[in-house]
Amino acid sequence: MFNLFDYMKKGNTKQKDAYKAINELGIFNSLKIYNPVLCGTIPIGIDLDNSDLDIIMNVRDLDLFEQKLKNLYRSTSSFNLKRTIIRGREVRPNSCFVTLS
Image (tube, rainbow, N blue to C red; front, side, top):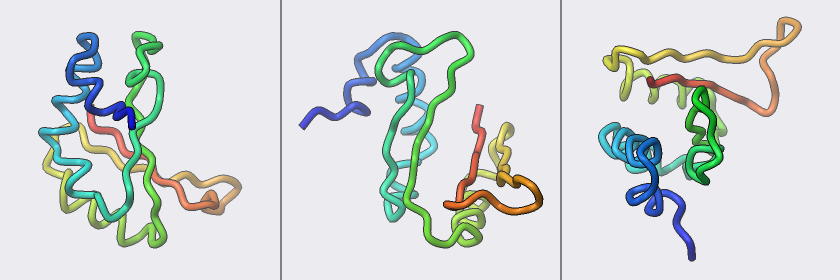
């Protein structure tokens, strides 16, 4: 089976940088219980200058997940966590956007 993450190890410069960052942060290992899946334009090489890297996860308890992210990454200088609220209510299904630049 084709592994997009492994492919990035030998891809273009942005893919290699993304691969290195994901490994250094230990995202797939630290968050494996959430079944992380790499997606978006960077892994498939059709990204633009302002494209970001997307990792989707299966999260049942958003509060627990948020705490886990804070414990793992809050010391990272560009850590930012945002929950999406529309018309005063959290978007369902649960979603959480985290930026690690």
